[in-house]
Amino acid sequence: MSTLPIPSFTTDWAAHLDEQLDDFLHTGVAIIDDCFDKQAVSALQAESGYINYKEAHLTHGERAATIRGDSIRWIDDGCPIGMNYLASINELAQYFNQTLYAGIRRSEAHFARYPAGFGYQWHKDNPAGRDERVISAVYYLNDDWTDSDGGEILVVDKLGNEQKLLPQANRLVLFDSNLLHQVNITHRTRFSIATWMRRDDDVL
Image (spheres, rainbow, N blue to C red):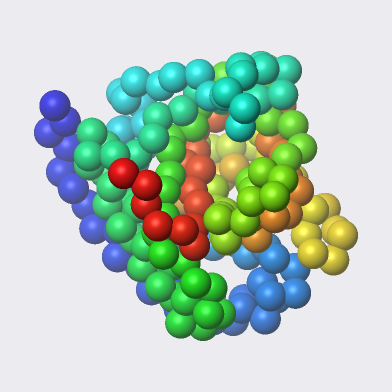
């Protein structure tokens, strides 16, 4: 069992996002750098390094490494640091409910580990005919990431422009869950947290 101290994930979401809201409405993409304090980042990095990962699958349950090459660990009570991250994301969801009337009712997230040589081809986070996911977010955990390391997320925004973003530590990328996006091939092991704010109730 982990003995890591539980840091504070308190952050002022309004301070990060108020000036970006109009642009987020038009493009469907927002970026928050320096999202949490250093202790919170370090704790998430540590937890991401010792948890057990399982190979991720596509929506229909198949494993296709040529399409998706990550391994994942859903955040639950066995991930105490991750649960504090998720609690902060739920506060972010309330911010979006208050400012954009987003109708978000819950959030979910998993740690993701991409080994060198893998990525995730173009996809949307809502499968065809589904709309439970409202806003997607990816939080990055790797220090000292450079252009040559690859692993960028590409998002085709609402204006049809392709945004290419490096997976820098303590960066949170937010985007409409219906936007097309992919993870480029990474050239070093890449750690992140994939996150979704959803409009449906939790299924027990």
